[in-house]
Image (cartoon, rainbow, N blue to C red; front, side):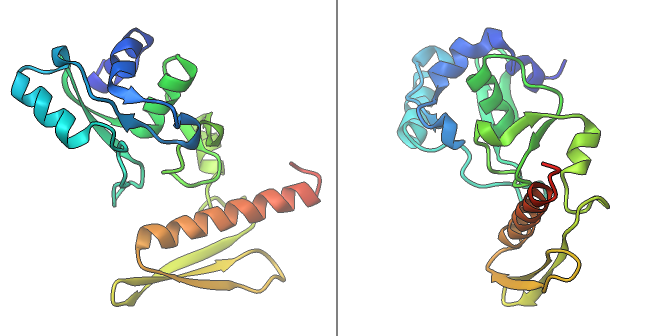
Length: 194
């Protein structure tokens, strides 16, 4: 069992509750608490961490290659551990070990509200994706220069495409994923499939 799996177990809930403020967990946000001295090897590390991070939001920025939010935590016994924020939120919210695979329902991998997370199989996860052949909508993201990106969203047969411009590739992809989620969900509702 790797260090991440060891950390994300119910027996670590006391440690994690002493580390994170969960008052906004339903919004998909955690904040660093001022952590107790026994979480650190030295008084200096304890003071430095709390001065720098205490009260601040955890993991503000998604990774560029994988748009999930990654959190680095130092555990007194495990040492440094990297964990995806949605897996940490699952454990803190439901007080159970996160499932092997968690799907972001609205296709936005950094929307970590518990209501947007569900246990999934590999097939479920692939099915809830704009790249899936069963997805009615389609689209593409292209770089247009000066660090900007253009998202072209094609809702479905007979519906005009929509185009938007964004300052980052992450936001352009997010818009495409969310629009496809909204369109597919709305179509399923109208067709009585949802």
